[in-house]
Amino acid sequence: MAVFGNYKTGVFYFVYFAPIWFYWGDSSLLEKQVSDLKVRRVLVNNINAVIVQGECDICSAQLLKDMLADVINEGHNKLIVDVKGLQCIDNSGLAAILWARHKIEENGGKMVVVGLGSIFRRKVSPINNLFNVAFSIREALWNLSDKSLGFK
Image (cartoon, rainbow, N blue to C red; front, side):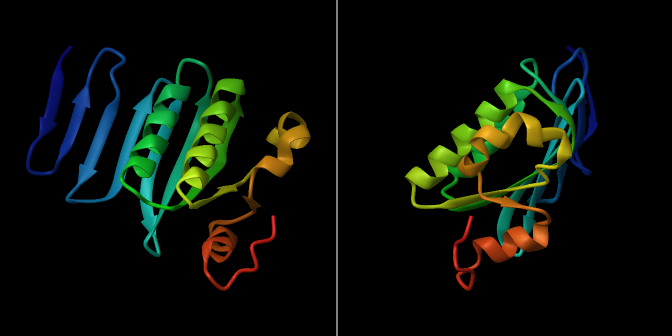
């Protein structure tokens, strides 16, 4: 495996199908990529959001689960998972999101999934009541705020 990067900018590239990690100064942005899946973690109004883009299948779902586990293990009790950028997701990707929902609720927290659009409706409709769904990050922030009524 070869590693290329610049320590001052915090940009490193790992070659031969290893994850690509990007760090920009603070921990407010972390991005990982494996094959066709890109997972990015950002802070939005002091709430962690995991933004997923590409194709999430059995080969790349562990990357998503690892990113979600990092957020949960740091003790954060509010999480937004934005899947609007996904072209496809299989059962292993859905299992990773369900696992994160279970863990965060086990710790007394709340998770909102953004962008379960038409691509996922057919696959998710039988279990749609398992997710707290929002159509935008703004709506997800409202659902996670103390002012919301907590409707699913």
